[in-house]
Amino acid sequence: MSTELTQMKCVPCRGGEPTLTDAEMADVLPSVRDWSVVERGDGIKRLERIFKFKNFAEALSFADGVGQIAEEEGHHPAILTEWGRVTVT
Image (tube, rainbow, N blue to C red):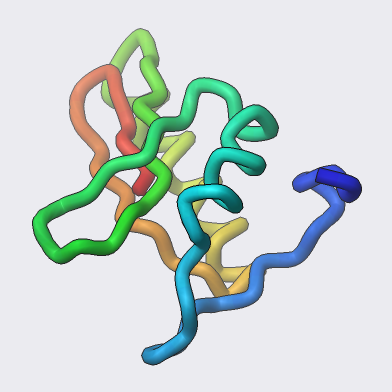
């Protein structure tokens, strides 16, 4: 990618907008190390990453931070908080 992802702004998905092609996804994946592509039975491919922590409090604090950034960006991922881990999809 010619632009660093950290410098880009999220463009929220709206119904009917095209998703990334497999080729575009392959181009992006090297920039998002430790993330994987998952499909949850609805035919839509998504990025997912599991973050690990020492305890629930650390996981909850991280999830709260992700939520704050997501709200600022207008992008709302699925965030699953469990003891010692947070899954962001």
